[in-house]
Amino acid sequence: MNLNHINNVFFVGIGGIGMSALARYFKSIGKDVSGYDKTATEITNALQHLGISIHFEDNLSNIDNAFKNKESTLVIYTPAIPKQHSQLNYFISNGFTVMKRSRILGMITENTFCLAVAGTHGKTTTTSILGHLLYECDVKLTAFLGGISENYNSNLILNGDEVSVVEADEFDRSFLTLSPDFACITSMDADHLDIYGDASALKKSFEDFSKKIKKGGKLFVKNGLSLKGITYGIEDDSDYEIRNIKIKNGTYIFEVKTPQTAIKNIEFNLPGRHNLSNALVAFAMALEYGCDVQKLVSALATYKGVKRRFTYQIKTDELVFIDDYAHHPEEINAVHSAVREMYPAKKVLAIFQPHLFSRTKDFADGFAESLSQFDEILLLDIYPARELPIEGITSEWLLGKINNPNKRLIQKGRILSAIKASDATVILVIGAGDIGEEVKHIKQGLSIAS
Image (cartoon, rainbow, N blue to C red; front, side, top):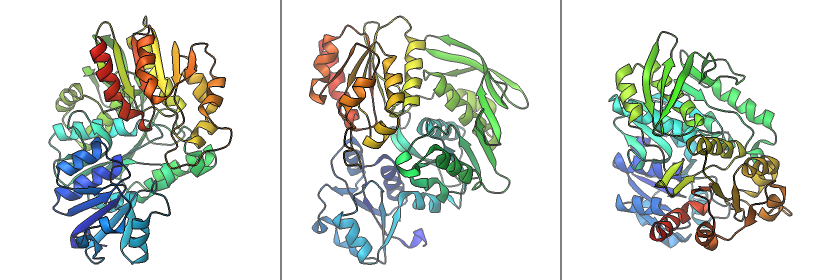
């Protein structure tokens, strides 16, 4: 299919973070864009401000007539949409071109120099750092992000169409639709076992992805992973290595050893060794692409982060409130170590909303162990997303596994009062479900209280 012949693009699930980036992209190149989502959010509001028509009821009458022409309309859907969705089934049964987001991303990027970021953790942050570095070096790029960049207040960075930067998502093996020139793999921890069945199948999919790199391309791998490529790591003798790390007023200052040289006095403002690692591989990929070293050093110092990735909502001497998307035990461990590194003497309260019944079941012991490290834990009900409940898999069951006396279950409406009742001075909200929607209310309540 030739995307140039398409006038209209309809999104089923337009409010998803990856879907909305594509919607912005198609709007920016002059297509008529419309779509459905279940509920209004900040993301859908932002799309409507761009002139994109969105409705929130699954009814055929809500589809504008212009989008009922199958010759000029492309339909993009997300796998999170239920199979019985009437609008999606209308498009399928009437012979429209209907494609998954990942396939469209593959088509958009195939005529560009594509840099893809893969891994079970760190994709969004790494992609947004890489997009920012290339943008600041005036590369003609389009970057599709899985989160809202603080620097651009968008999940799309647009500066041309010669280079594309994308997240290579392992969920349902969708990253196998890409053929990148450069790719990195940040991690291969077990996840999405509802799709893969076991960790070995997940690992095999990463191996398959590594073979999708174009001839003459480059693969960057975190040191220690069982794939061959340009290695990167922290103080571990990798090809690209961060060393001599200092922390000054919450900022990392370090040097990077490359295969050719050492670059000193690099600054990076995101807390956590995991974020340092993400910054390093983005830096390495941009350098290997051909960006100027000093421009890269300057750009890295101005990187502000991604919303809901260790985002400071309140940062005072008396109270710190941080919001993070962590939804896997390894991600929670990374958040914990970052908090302890920055605030070693302060009491930390973690409020966690588990995401998916299957993930909670598969990693219950890991969740319990990672959550037990905080001084106080508040646990919300499991956010189901695309799933039906699994018998016996509840937050109460998970709570019983947490080895810490300062723990309890809580409803979303009681979060603010529970925080106020605690003597913790560092507050963490973590999870990938709708807990993100509560953050602004919590921030407002705490701001008024202080």
